[in-house]
Length: 68
Image (cartoon, rainbow, N blue to C red):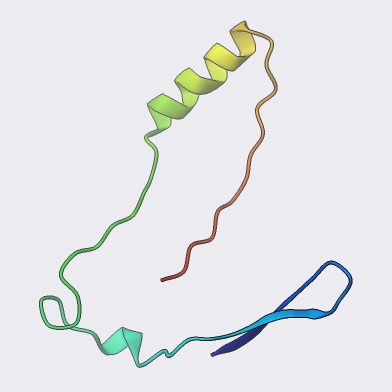
């Protein structure tokens, strides 16, 4: 998999390459040993929103993409 990262003006910043080999065919304990998914519990999200509302703060939402 190849990717070109660009600067704001459209010039090439860096070229990236990543090797991807049949990820659907991996076996637990052979190809990997643990799985991690960072997920926030719903009650924690509700608490955070309630505290933000109480203190008249603005809450922003964003999506973080991580790739290993």
